[in-house]
Image (cartoon, rainbow, N blue to C red; front, side, top):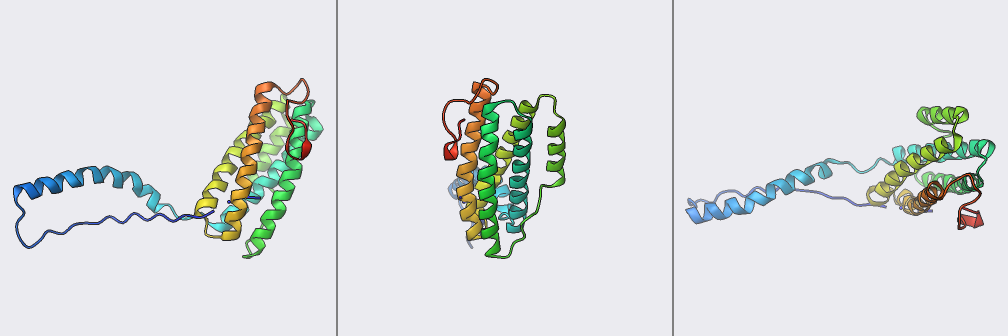
Amino acid sequence: MQRYSISMFIIPLLAGCGGSQPDEGQVARQSEASTPAAPVGATQAPLSSAAAPDAQSFVSETGETLLYEIAAARIALERTRSNAVRDYANMIVKANGEAAADLKTAAASERWIVPLGPDQRQKAALAALEKAADFDTAYLQQQRRAHEERLGDLRRFATKGNSRPLAAFAAEAAATVDRHRQILRRIETIGRSDGPTEGRGENGESL
């Protein structure tokens, strides 16, 4: 699977005055030099204060989302009448099952705790899917939102995470999630009720 690590530090340097009084030209040059630095510092300050992603939080949130997407896909296999949505759901069950196993392996190297199921918010989303009148629309909307959130988390940990095994996992997983997100867009664009969309998904599934 896929992801990373980066540290950025912004250290403001304050120039002290020398022993002699500066002439007017020196004052002007100092003023001109300091003027553009202020907005740059103001823009970068929030980045410097952002801590590196916490490894345990990453494992928990990623694991919960993987399990939520698997559960949602299984509901889709029971409720959808769309071949494209069914193919997509089958792909998610397989791909996320593999990702969950990879996450468990990466987490075990440093003894991070892997969750056993979705969180409460995701359980509520699954309950809503069970009752949705327009199932396919509800399912695809939930999946798009989940993929966008997870992709951001994966990319962030891949570049800023403090665990090499998890960062490597995140980098690989991010590429997979991005491909799944593109497939979702294609399903929504081409349609979901007239059979499979053009192309094949991972592992040969029709999409």
